[in-house]
Image (cartoon, rainbow, N blue to C red; front, side, top):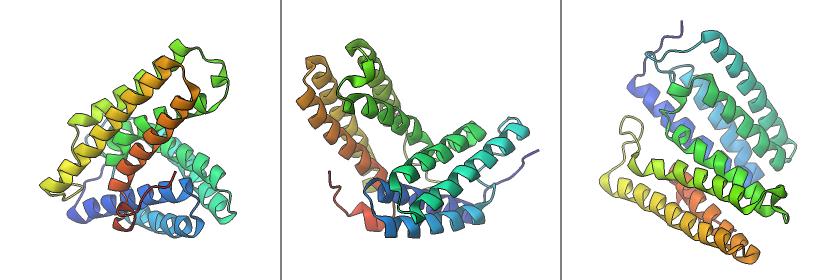
Length: 236
């Protein structure tokens, strides 16, 4: 059976790995290959140091399923590193998402304790809605169906309103906790604007609100990234 426990060093490694992941996510998205290579290497080192100590010792699950999903996650991660080395960042983004998904289903109870684990449903929902709205024919979806995907996305981020970064993982002060709430609030407000544009069925307005929503979400990801990226402006 999987049985581990976290020490203070493990919490530090978890935070370090999550910061590297958030930075890597943004590197890939905005086409910074040198930074992506650097953060991918450090993320891998942090994960290797952590081992399985991110897994909750009290959670119940199938060890066979966990090992199977973990192998799939490792393969997707290897494909991510290869795609970065080959300067194929769109493929790297796809493989990174696959690796993240496999980790999310490998041990959901433990994955959902991670800060970026809590964000993943929202990021996944946003990627789905983005792909629909970016298509000129909305991938054949009707406005009611598009509204469904927007509502799902809004619920994912609304759930984050009551979630604060765990002190065990992030030694944030009150001001930083307030910043987290401001970033969540900005996303929720922006999703309301996006909903209005969808209701108006105005494509130009939809694309504008999409860009603004994407920027608001990236600002939240930057909150969990390395300090060097927290101070950077997100370019659309």
